[in-house]
Length: 246
Image 1 (tube, rainbow, N blue to C red):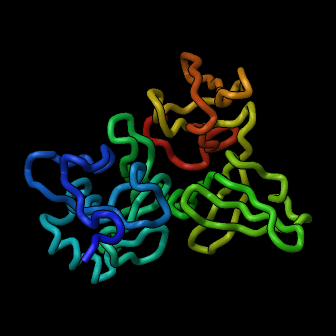
Image 2 (image 1 turned 135 degrees about the vertical axis):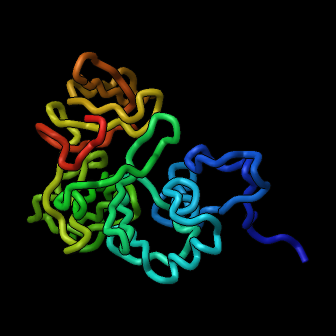
């Protein structure tokens, strides 16, 4: 029979940088499944549990932990160890009552940081990636983790644009506000050589019609620039979530 579809296996040498794996300790690793985050900016749940958080020693223990419902992602039990974990996801370790948030990391692109504030746990910033007009003059906003929200013309969210951030409470499944990508607001850089830096947006420049927009930010002691695609609005005067290095 002929081969149909792509490979279902992944070698360690070909694994994305987000996996943070020793490349020569074995031949194979966990391949990520399609889901809310792209493969090059996500970690399989099994890798997160076994190799990064160190909760399990092997894949058999990972499967046992997931079957027992000891791991929740954004408040939902996940049983698939191939499930992609990406930016701003909240991981809950149920028996230990510990929470981790996935944030940008200079070396590994994304990395889990422990959350100590109880109020911070329920908040998940969602960046708008696409805006579409649908039936009855409503708009559909698609966020960076694949969620979709519908709004009527009367809604305050109707005028939001790609790049803006929705403040989502996943426990109550509701929106608690939004942050626009505009000068004066705080933003986090999620890609490029300046990944992980936090600053206040100073200017949004359009140098050439064929080139991407440039965003200039002001940090504690310096100014820096990056492309529009890497900017994630995170607050007005201060971040709405705890940033460990801020």
